[in-house]
Image (tube, rainbow, N blue to C red; front, top):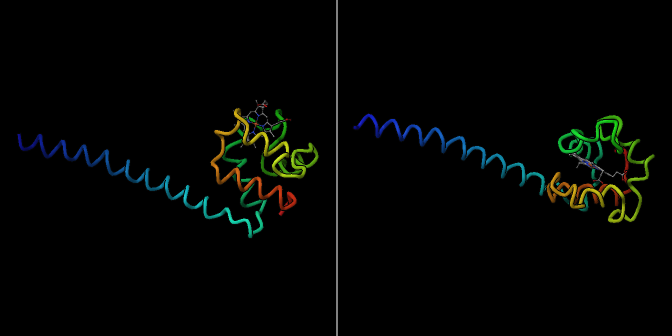
Length: 125
Ligand code: HEC
């Protein structure tokens, strides 16, 4: 009987500890991304915007579907295709990112970064 109790506690611990770690790491990611959205700071295409495309968009936008959002192709595809015009809130890129078909692909902080980047002139920085 005692053995059984000890064993079940081990199982509970084995389940709770990884779950806690997962929760903690997801909070970390969210907190980090919120901190990066500071309207005073220039938003950098290479290190802040492209990683959003690489993680959330290229499963579908990998060449055959416009815009091509793969690293190395995305900037030309977005600018030549007329996706990043001003005002930023009316641009085709931002409108699509917040649309019902696409809203779930990005966090609010990521949407804000894309909006800011376009508003700052959509630089290849
Ligand atoms: C699951 C597949 C899928 C993912 C992931 C996806 N898209 Fe799309 N995207 C589509 C499809 C399908 C269309 C065309 C139909 C529509 O408008 O929803 C489209 C259309 C677009 C358009 C408009 C194209 C045009 O010529 O009008 C833009 C801009 C766009 N996506 C950007 C993005 C961005 C940015 C991401 C990542 C945050 C993304 N998409 C993630 C499937 C996807």
